Amino acid sequence: MGKKAILVDCAPQRQSSKAVKAPIKTGLYDVLTGTVPLNQALTKDPRGDTYLLATPKRPKNAVTMFQSRPMERLVSVLRGGADFVVIDCGPVGKGSDAAVIARLADATVLVSRRQMLHSPLVAHAAQVLEDAKAAPIGIVITK
Image (cartoon, rainbow, N blue to C red; front, side):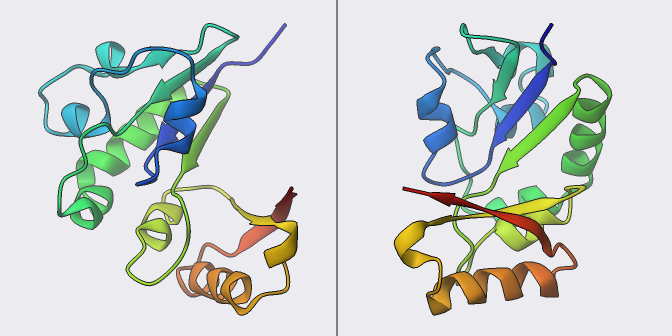
């Protein structure tokens, strides 16, 4: 028996949204502005018990959106309705939303390609998260 997971795709690249094989019409911004109820914005991945809350519309002031009280409340509601809530915030870098979003998480995990593992960019990303009081609990190495 699987566990229910909700994936919140806050990354500008929308890689998580692309991985879910289902049509996406509404998402996070619509829920936070009250345009669409949460249950209409969640997209079920047909391959399992994972739901996606995408960000097909990304406002110019995305950082403000991620820092908002409605965002904090939404994450709390999602935690109450799933066994796991995973927030994909994309790359940590200059002007990144990742440090802001990471503050909403119980834990952060840094993801790096094998060839980039020892680069200054990965060290910088870890430092940014640590400075945000969201130090990574581990690292996932890809490719």
